Image 1 (cartoon, rainbow, N blue to C red):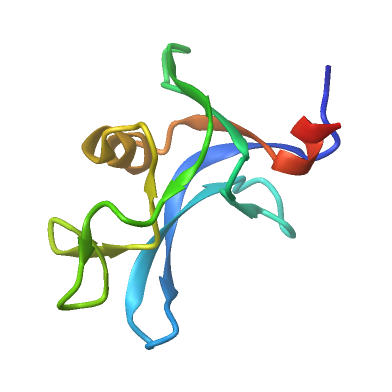
Image 2 (cartoon, one colour; image 1 turned 45 degrees about the vertical axis):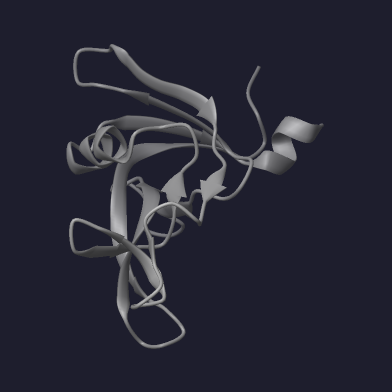
Length: 117
């Protein structure tokens, strides 16, 4: 079954500015073949599926944001190995997660509102 808000692309990241004008890494899915609407944010409750270049399933789950792990009270933000991140995924080791996004593996994203229907 195809969902109305199903999106295919590559797991990657964007560098965004937070409310204090500091840069942080945000996890996204991008489809470089599209001119408009080529990027989708991964929001709370979205379904994410990632496969490697050989077709092996690397991740398949509904994503929940963990905004407490890696929180640095001195800098008032989440830091991992010196990099500021928008959020960490709950239930996935962050080094594994980063590896998926650094390799730009193929991804399918289904928005939470589609899963509720």
